[in-house]
Length: 297
Image 1 (tube, helix red, strand yellow):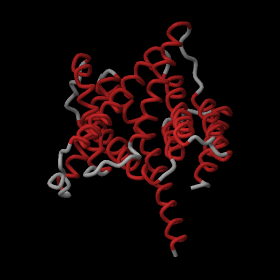
Image 2 (cartoon, helix red, strand yellow):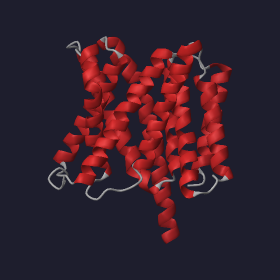
Image 3 (cartoon, rainbow, N blue to C red):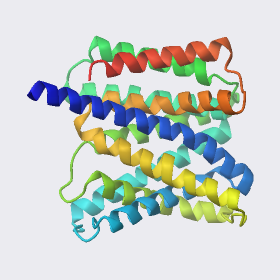
Image 4 (cartoon, rainbow, N blue to C red):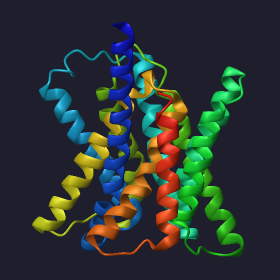
């Protein structure tokens, strides 16, 4: 019976991680739509993402009575500030990389580096080399991401600076993944998501205000902003944080690779943007890496 319950729990955890990755993938399209239809700078889009997502989860926690039971201890405050700082800096570093290179290059380096950083950090912390299954899953997934996201980038110093920012973004998200595995008394995943996202949005708010955050009062723009904040951000991060404590960190990090895969597939289906042979091969490799990784959970 205990074996059956354990297997069921692992299946639910894997499904939750897959759901988080798919939801993040829809965020790429909705964020792009918000930026183009609202005339916003990418940093402003990121600020809206974190603020709206955090506000939505705070509202849910308040309606469910979670705020009344929350005690603002020093460890709770430190965790929320750390999570918000990492979320805000991750977004800022990623968009700095986009500005210096391209969306494809920045996404490939940022998302592809997360499982690599997590694998290396886990090996150092446990003083054990990663298993062959883990290494195979990471190599397959990152190779697939390279093929899927390959796009011409900048050159010279701009390329070097862009890659550096992308690696900083990947390291920030990897740090967030590892940090969230350690529980803090009085702070569950819902409250962490709510106040972490809000804090990250506050971190980006000054830059967003300077760059402009005025939204046209149109229903389509407001609907996209609401979806962007609630679904891929609020629900996506809540799903990810929910299972981090019971899932191997490398397996959790591999879920981030579903973001570009989902975005590419949605673009192919909705906007008829062909992936080409290279793109489909990359998608197949990425999916194979995920299957290898999740087969061990």
